[in-house]
Image (tube, rainbow, N blue to C red; front, side, top):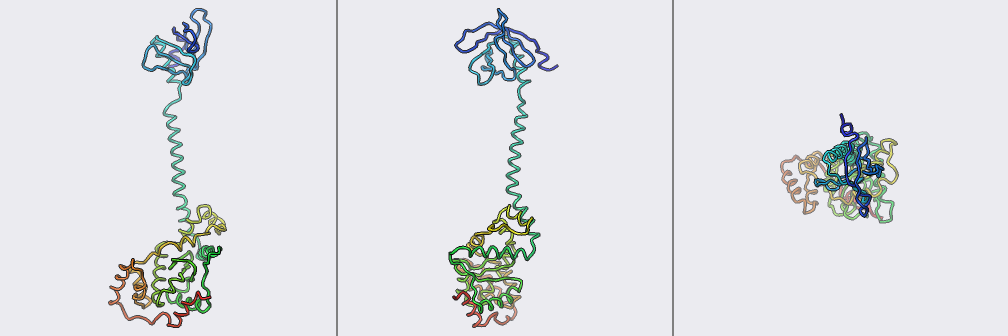
Amino acid sequence: MTALDKYTRLEGSGIWRAAPEEQRRDVVVSLGNASLVIADARSEIVLSHWSLPAVQRMNRGNNPAIFAPAEDHDGETLELDDATLIEALETIRAALAPRQPLRWLRMALVAATVLLFAIGAYWLPGVVVSRTTQIVPPAMRAQIGRTALDSLFLGASGERICADPEGRQVLATLRNRVLGAGWQVSVVGGVPGLEVAHLPGQIMVLGADLLERLDSAEALAGWMLGEALALQAHDPLSEALHYAGLRATLGLMTTGALPEGSLAGYAAQLFAQPVVFPQAEALGLRLDALGQAPTAYALSLPEAQAGLAQALADRIGSRATRAPRLLSDGEWLTLQQICAD
């Protein structure tokens, strides 16, 4: 038997008021399946119908109990002192009212959905970028790197690739000896603070200011090898795709190309970042493979890298005989003039 069945057709007396300013009237209260019927105690004329699920007790814990047809209702009231009728009303209201756990469940589901979207927004781009970097072929990497570099020169702020023919020829010679033919190396002028950076596709960019302040090709070789080590430690394509965004990365996966303009400004942002200097032992091994001492590179380091310079100096004495110089004096001077108009 349900609560409704138990109290069906239950009747009792009460005092009803149509509005706060109206006279109180003795009434007979009858409980139906889902409604409360209020009738005049003398004439038995029905005065009002209330929906049981909406009935609210206005003075919980006090007697006589006062009920209203709705929580925000400021008109009718019903005063009851019949304990059985009060119990019946409370029981039926509880049985018919919306279940609180369901409301909390809905709130929990909404919160969980929002949380999942938030996690997805944070997690999904990283997964897509990681997957994309695994499948992009070398030729596409190089194209992305060139696109990022070319975007640097779209404005009129003075950045340029240094292109003196003789200087470029010497640069190619040095690149082959230090990094190998698989690399592309360019010197860029007009970017204050740029020393060395790398882009996807094994593209290395040297700052014109760095080239001008160094004393030898051996010093420059240290900077180039240090940047090559930085590339090995972190895939530059990943950073470029994070910059381009999730939509552009999905476009690359589906069409084989990044949307136009998705890397605009990326090179400028990248070139403004500080150089990531290598570990002394890792760089020393690369220089050993070239047969070059780290002395020239160590002397070219900023004061903040005194620890790296000292660590390189400490390993000089135990190394084998060194190879010839990477460039002649004339070649080095030609390379330093690569940005000459």
